[in-house]
Amino acid sequence: MPQLPAPDYPADVRARLETDAREVIARYPDSRSALLPLLHLVQAEEGYVTRTGIRLCAELLGLTTAEVTAVATFYTMYRRKPGGDYQVGVCTNTLCAVLGGDAIFDALKRHLDVGNGETTDDGKVTLEHIECNAACDFAPVVMVNWEFFDNQTPESAIRLVDELRAGRGAEPTRGAPLCTYRETARILAGFPDRRPGAVEASGGAGPASLAGLRLAKGDNGTARVGPPRGAPPHDERPPEHLSSHDAPQQTSASDPDHPSGPVTEEGEG
Picture 1 (cartoon, helix red, strand yellow):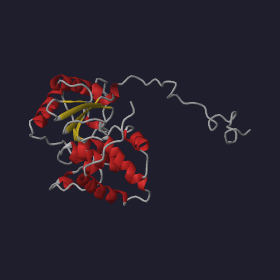
Picture 2: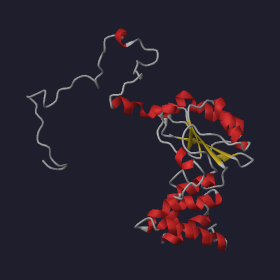
Picture 3: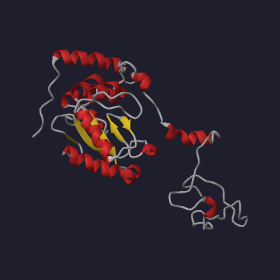
Picture 4: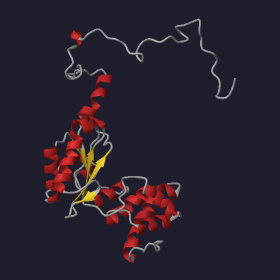
């Protein structure tokens, strides 16, 4: 059956959200560019993007609800149903998986008695697998409300969610202190994090992420690039046998008898 039009927010909530929304919209030369932060704003109100939130975004930006829904359902950072105070994402992409991400995810599912995208009965934790947390050098990685918890194990991840459910909080490996999912959504909408010291604590890449940059700048320090695990030292390696991909190939520069012809646009003779 077709759904009825979404209900509006209560008058006081609508007025407050409109005030915040117009502040966001004013930052952009084209109002529809404000859609992503506005979706975070309405998510901060109820913990997920409701039909009422979609209606508000559409009305303020001059869009249809279908256009707003298309964006809200495209990005995984927007919830489509109620969730917990803490979104616990376990990376199960290649590097994290082989280093223990799959084991962490399985252990948390058993421990919390939830599946992927499900929330614990107390409403504290929503568990999800994430394809990549963009922190491969600290694998396996768990994120809580988009804050990093690096180099995790099944045991440490279980302790982490137990602390969250007990209300004792947890300290991210790097970055700002944790706040609730709704508070995080408001920050992502573009409003300042006014917690004392939170902005100063926000960090970028960790030391492992910067190792390559230091090497590129000539700062060798004590870092050493060694052979793969289990491989013999460099001076004991067997002679190298190039694959067909690595072996030298004849090119127009190395094979004068077969020079390359003039470069033409596609479709031209």
